[in-house]
Length: 250
Ligand code: NAD
Image (cartoon, rainbow, N blue to C red; front, side, top):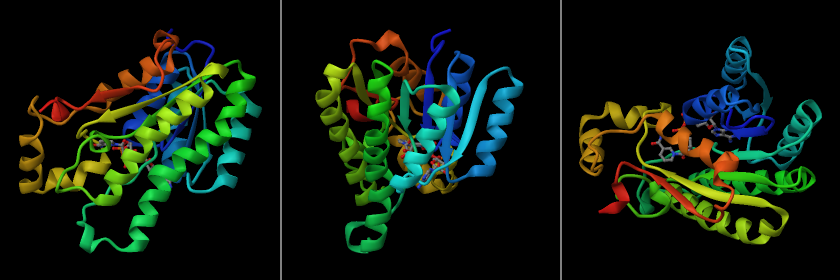
């Protein structure tokens, strides 16, 4: 098993890509802690994983709260003994132009998508150092690499921030054996993209920008995240794993 003996924390793991990663990690031998604001969904997923023979727990976590991060990571290490892997996956989208974006909406998205990654990383590092090293995987986006007209400025700014924050983390903690990499998915079939896929014009526009001609499946991103979590990627840090159907190759 590719994650045998590892303990992983996945923020926003209750649904979407985070849920698929939680299931995959558990089936590859990891003990998985899911932190999410969607506690009911998180607990249901934990039951499912446990019934399938895996080990998992769910914790209430709003990633914008340093206190909740501290409590969630402490509960994880107290139950599973250590922390080897952190997937900063929680995130929210948005569809506005610069002039229509309120300050409150800018702050909300930046707090969840960018500050949340910083807060989680800050709490995880001492635990990973204690464990003798670790792997931090930050979920950015293809929109953390290039701009687009039909997302939102705060979404793209937040995902760009995640990209460079990841490199800063990688460089600062390489000597502790802590690796940090960002993942850049293109459009994926999850609840986040439901509204966009239901709107025919938006759907067609998005498809026209994907050389492979379709949205990705959550599993297609999760396999990349699994690789980064495992020791198979032991010489990889500070890098960007792009899984976008060719969007940014054009
Ligand atoms: P999703 O909406 O299905 O899942 C996001 C999860 O994050 C949910 O479980 C949600 O409850 C949780 N979350 C939101 N705010 C939170 C908060 N404050 N605290 C804790 N948890 C919170 O979305 P998804 O598509 O699975 O997205 C996962 C990640 O991938 C996000 O960071 C997203 O920006 C990124 N991403 C998604 C796509 C896509 O096309 N779906 C593309 C590129 C990047």
